[in-house]
Amino acid sequence: VTVRAQPVFNSVSTNNDTISKYDLFEISADITASFTNPFDYSQVYLKSVFTSPSGNTIVIDGFYYQHYLLNAPNPVSPEGDPIWKVRFSPDETGIWTYILSCTDNSGTAYSDASQLLCISGDNPGFVRKSGQRFLKFDDGTSFLPVGLDIPWNLFDGGFYKYEEWLDSLAD
Image (tube, rainbow, N blue to C red):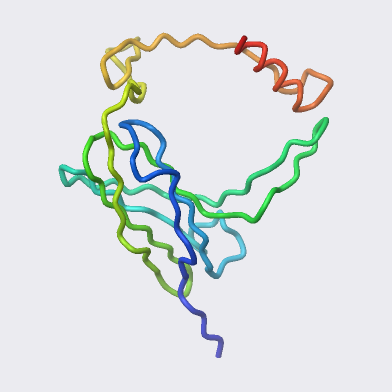
């Protein structure tokens, strides 16, 4: 008989405990769980339940993250160990609460409940449909998309060519 322990939250950290409205709040969690494929929800599933200051709840799925280093000209190599992440952008100022849960075939584990303070900021919010043909930000300002069509396979020089192109656009 094989007895498996339910998942364990070894550590949980955030990019900040105070975030401006619509900015990125990121949770990183080191979790021990039983799975062979971290991308198969039937084997392992991380989620966070956020509760807004007005009492609304939002469930955000977590994901398995591996940071990579860009090596010349094309190969990438993993840097550090993989970790679990949840990314969220609060849309209401005030104190939010959140809790993580991780489920695998042996059960479900929960993190301690935590808080996030959302303050006013100058981020215009998410882009949404406005009428039949237009887009606008949450703050009501118009969104006029302008972009470039950069080919992904028609170059010599590998991934570094992208850095060169994108850096030249920033100038």
